[in-house]
Length: 213
Ligand code: SF4
Image: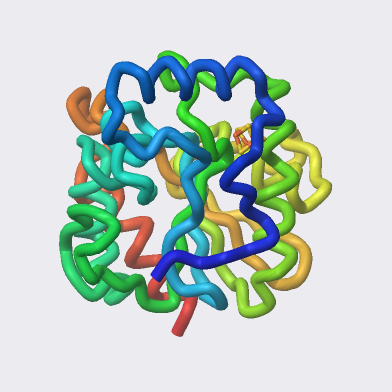
């Protein structure tokens, strides 16, 4: 259930540092996807999740956001629990998983070295997130995973980050009747250190589910 949006360019090379890093990784791991990772899910979903960027051995390897590494189990397990996914796991692009009224995207579509995109790269890629949001006519709720995702969503709406600051489990009103929820990213670091627990993440999704009723 991949979507084909004008908001996604599989051959984009606007960020030279990232394009050359993808070439290096592809040489080392020939079976990896190693291209901009497309959004995944229902095209006209009311619920959009925005992450940071593909992980080296996760989305960058499999070509589906949050699939193949540590970030996926908490995210997809939680989406299943709250009725946004047909199965509790995302294994690979051909596993038949469907998202229900939900889509997952990233602020930066290409793998960055050390998971750290530069500011110019985040800005370059905002054109895709902005287009995706503009073409999502049914959109009601966005969940930003981490501060970069939060700031990218704000930029996509033409808003300043200082007007609505990131905080875990915060809720912000955006133009057009869209509500932005924030959560700490479902990263291995955050979950291993207890910064984000399963209960904390479930509490955010529970509120999102309630707001979509
Ligand atoms: S990060 Fe985004 S803008 Fe930069 S090369 Fe990849 S797809 Fe293009």
